Length: 386
Image 1 (cartoon, rainbow, N blue to C red):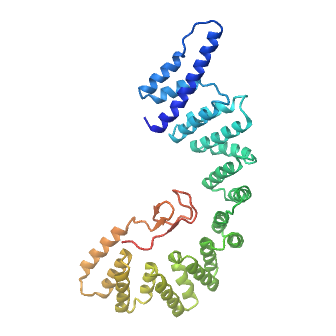
Image 2: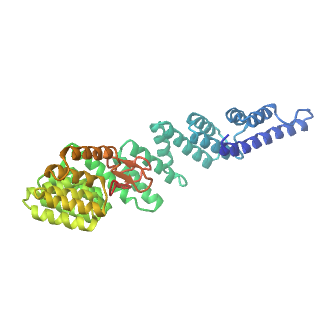
Image 3: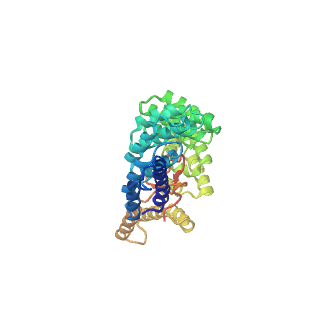
C-alpha cells in the first residue's frame, strides 16, 4: 500500500472511530447497552489491515459526518484520489462537500476550487471554467482560480482570453506577466499571418514587443513579415537584433537572412556578418551556411569545416565535411564516403534539435511553450549533436 495512502487513511479511520465512540457514549447516556465501536468501523479497519485500501476508504467516507471537524479530511481524500487518477471519486467527494448546507463559506469556496481542478483533470473544461470564473473575485482564491483559468485557455488556444487573465493576474499577484503576454500577442499574430492580414499581425507584434523588449519570437516574426513583403533591409535589421539578443536562435532564420541579403545583392556583407557571428559563437548552423557560400572553393570550404570540427565536434559538421569530399572526389572513394554520409545521416535522424532548459524535454521541432513543463521560452536549439 502506498505510504501516502496509509498516512491519510489513519486519520480517516481515527475520525470514524471517534464518531462511532461518540454515538456509543450518547447511547449509554440514554441507558442503552450498545457495543463501543460501530461494526462498520471494525470492518473498515479489517480492510485496512488486509491491504484493501479502496474498500476501507469507501466505508470510512460513508461514516464521516461532514462538519467543521472533518472537512479537511474530505478535501485531503479528494485530492489524493485525483493524484491517483481516480477523478470520478474525487468529484463525488467534492460535490458531496459543496452540497452540505452547514459548510462555512471559505470551506465551500475551497471545495469549489478543488472540484474545478477535478473537472480539469477529467477534461471537462467548460465546467471547470465556470467554477473558476465564479471564484476569480474571491479574496483568498482569486490567484489560484485565475491561474487555472489561464491553463485552460492556453490548452484551448484562446489567446485573447489568455491576455485578459494574465493582465488580471498581474494585479492580483502584483508581479509582471510580460513574457507570457508577449507570446499571446505572437500567437494572435500567427493567426493573422495565416489569414494574410499583414497589417494586423504587425500591430500585434508591436504590442507584444512593448511588453517584452527581449522577446525573440517577436523579432523572428517581424523579420518574416518584412521578408515576405519585400522589405529586406528591415528584415535583416530584425534578424541581426535577434542574433545579438539570442545567438542560438539565428539558425531558425538563416535561410531567410541569406535570401534577404541576396535580394539586395549584398553577398559580401552577408558573408562578413556570418563570419563575425561564427567567430563569436562557433555556431554549427552558421558554419554550414558559410561553407555553402564558399563551396566553389571546395578546398577552402573543407578546411574551414575541418577546423570547426577539431574544436567543436558535431555530427552535422561531419556530414557536411563528407558531402564536400564527395563533391571534390578527394582521397577516399565515392562509395566509402557515401556509406559514411548515410551512417551519419541515419544517426542524426530523430535526434533532438531542441531541449528545454527547465525540465530537459527534447524535441525535433521548436516549441515556444514547453509541452512538458509549460514554460515559455524554455525550449532552445541544441548547440551541437555529438
